[in-house]
Image 1: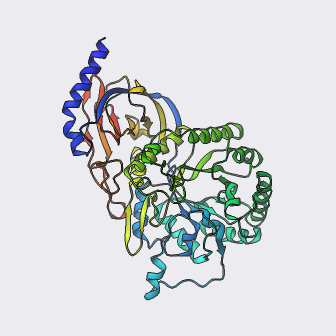
Image 2 (image 1 turned 135 degrees about the vertical axis):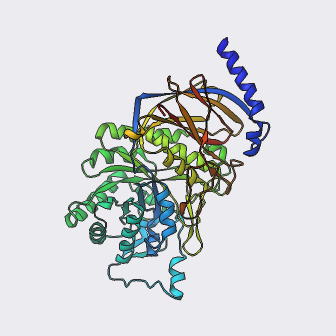
Length: 503
């Protein structure tokens, strides 16, 4: 009875004192609030979050403009570096099956009138409706890509063309890429979504796993004959555990990790693909993660989501480009880590609806809402997940919370909680404890006026500026009561709370 009285007291006191906070953040006065408790246990460790967990994915066709992925594209370099000192750039996508290796092509000039022509063409995600425009990939593009990778500090997944190219040509391209990239290349992918080859005419309607596996093995053997130490990943299927599981068993000794894709919604023309649906738990995601976990347990090969985003076929306006995507994306990163995944690559490019970074070289680049969710993840940092239990979860079913401890002696006295309040109509007063009272607690809030807002999101009360300019000066002090840090989370918001001990 005493616990219930305290909860009732907190609920009503928060409703009164939190009104100004909700108004400032743009949420309606009709929003209700509940009081919950989050308990973190640093001694119960879960999956690791590697330093290079975060990743971006672009179309291979973007390499047809050699100056895009180049160290001279300093603004894009800045946006990428802000997401982590380490990370993985994946170049692939639907267009990878329509890109031709052109080793004898002359370097493109980038001066005078031709400069604008070359630099303006930032390409968005291929919609996958049919054959893409053919593009040439030149040694110049690969050389510039190496400079871009060096400037960001990231590594590379590189897609080859098994869809319309012969194995000998793919091997020649792989040889140049491997020689240029060295240890910056973590994997080649031989194809993109081969389980959907039948949709765009790359293979016939009866194309099955056995046929794919035979082709994959042939390309693998030809490339390896020319590049003996070439690393590979696969199968890079769209969503197909029926192909993932046998691939893992058949090629477990030939790949450094398993790769698969995931899109939360689609197609964008379907009116039921909404923000509300995006923020609800997705049974298909649970099934995909279960398949990945099964293959990892059976084969001991790690897995990565090498292409993902909110809505396939390029995204959906009013959903993919909104603040809801920031909450969804950040939450997905932790769901994947909890499922044992080693990393994630959000697909994008150009002005695609779901791209994390939008823009062109002459016009500049901006951070889209999804970028903010990735930035929140970056601030929590790599390390290990720990047990995080929310009491009375039924009172806020769309609230998710994750505990993180960073590795290293400097982080030994800090415990972090990352909380996503994915509810549009319910704020939460959250008490966060570990069983030991922290000496200090701080928070970085991820907020926007509305879930469907496209431009006014902030992290730590600050927007991301040019070249990814952002800092942590917007951290706020969180009060500590009865041994726990207490924070109010408005509906449709997120926060990173850091508990510090022995300060």
